[in-house]
Length: 312
Length: 312
Image (cartoon, rainbow over all chains, first blue to last red; front, side, top):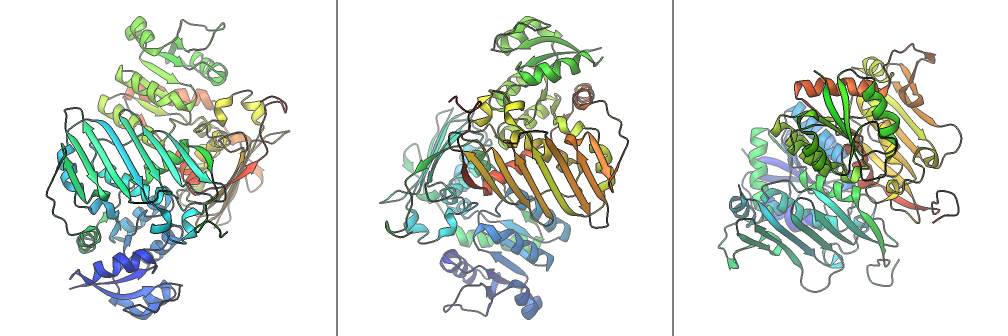
């Protein structure tokens, strides 16, 4: 029996990733889309609120994916759980750690599946790297996540709002990989944020980690080729490099052959298993690291940010 | 058998609270003080680092209290646990949630007592209020924590540094009471911070909570009498007011008689029990709420802060 699923929030990530991943997965059938924005390209019925959708479609929708910006995600997920639907959350799973905790409690209470889907954790290098690092001690860690916000979030002002995370929106993908593969939790030692004078959220972040020689550099004002790299040296001499966001893995400089279904196809495969088992799988570590960085960060002013250099 | 204890960090709170509370508790004997600052009023031997103190005093010191500013607290607590000593942490227990998690793991691994001591949770009104609220639904919550930083932290620049928490340093006391007495976790809905133009940490914070009519107002630029008040109305018509930081309790407007040993004496009584049981008691909720507020907060600039209006 396939799982009827609805997409709540129909933006770039829903169109680019969720629709094709659902279409390619035999366990799911896309039943509806719920969005307040105008839609001309929807392959299924469109509703402007979830309550109306649940009412109209009834038991044919057993699960939802919440792919809105992080701000409204909690309320939408709560409502879906209250309506008895399994929930897949885009990353980050909610706006705060308290919201994540509350959703976990509610899913357990109702016996419903809840999955905090960190798509980067499904990159091909992640499981092989985790296996290689298990039981070792990390000596050195360097994360570089440099990309151009104008390319990856064109015109999306919510990324700059309070709670929009700024450069931590991509940076949390790096942290979701690092926390999945490292043999010990990352502890933030300090952080410096660069916040554009006309925005609330950082365009750049430099983080240091305690107990290891560890640093992360997040830059959203980077033009040219993206760099999404995690380099790790272990105390016993193993040298790993995850490149292109975890798509490629180098060990001691030699590229490894990787198998992988692709991030979102792998993520939906996992979600199908959780729905059928009515299980909860929520990794809050990447958000915990970001929250800790924000808690201790020194903030400095960066030049005002404009999408095209002239607009407000 | 009494517990030999050393105080690490000998500032205002150590002198005003820890020394007299230890002296008044038959379970403890103060063995040493560890501080890098000059000390002329110490009642016991003074060391300038903990390793030297543990080496010199050996098994006569079984426990330490870490009463430094939050920044170095983690490294000092880690070292004390590694040296086999029980640890009491002043509030907040560390600088980040990750540090708190790590200390909990280390204490469990070593079978040592660890206590995150939130002194305000030992105020006389807290346990009676928690009993009154158990099983009820909160409709309305108002927290007002208004005091003068110049009175309570005179000249202590660390409160303004990155990680120093600013007005959350007292505000977290209110949150430690609220999270202890409320029947459900507080979920931050939004926050506005006022950050002095020449400082890193907020002098004022306004927080709203989700799912209830809830708000907290923290103000560190308040002159005159302090206001440390938590007002709670339940859905079934109970009206509670905790005043003077939890020292007084009003129910339906009528003041209740309270018994209480005093905050720090009660805290040390609890710590003695944990040391003897080699137990871990760490409540991270107040820090989680502050971290969530910092994560979603809108920041606005406040006038530059100077301790006396003219100094830098």
